[in-house]
Figure (cartoon, rainbow, N blue to C red):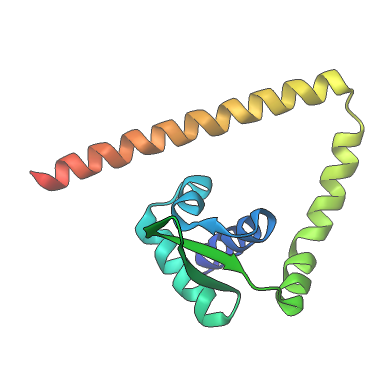
Length: 131
């Protein structure tokens, strides 16, 4: 369980770093987690000094999460993910553009379907908890 929390935290950090400042709700959407789970992750990231929360000047109900540049974290993430990135690059380099386009389409559809099923499950769970 602890490892899953670490990986989800790294995932959220990576997403916020790539996207720059991003609304907390968008992180929930991108990770497929509930807003409550993302809030807990943001709490940990903020406490560790990896992100900061700011208010959205256009909508005070929204929280914007901004990554804080952290070389130590970047090295940690690099150590974990660079070997995988290199192997993935080597593998994908062996495919034609047409094959890559198919893989991208199929993967995108898998992700979309998984998100839709997750939404359905959360909806069912909310409905049953109201009873």
